[in-house]
Image (cartoon, rainbow, N blue to C red; front, top):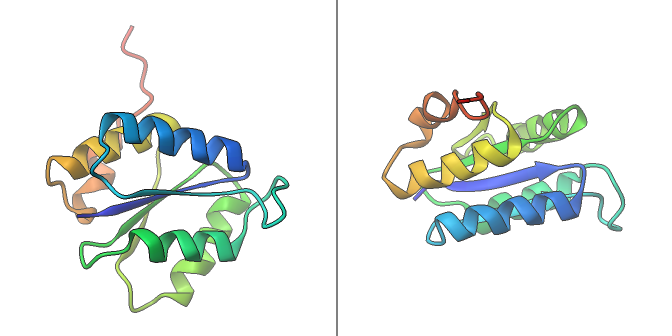
Length: 125
């Protein structure tokens, strides 16, 4: 099963998104990688790497980031793990993570995940 890592500048935000996704798809491995190692705002290479390791399987890992340096740090982690199947998914962090978790639960592959979450966050009203 594809794992998901939520990368945010805020530890609380990442943990909240993981909690919400877990309520909808508790079987899907989703890990938070938010904030700096000391709990401050920012992104941490170590936190992201450790989160990838926790949820990794042969099906791969989807990285969902909030913005800016979270994307750059996620790219560095991917480069350091060239032998792993990891993909960055471009979507709103909350809606995209929940949709991604539901899609993974229904069997969507890592390769198909971006297409499935592409409409996340589009207003329907």
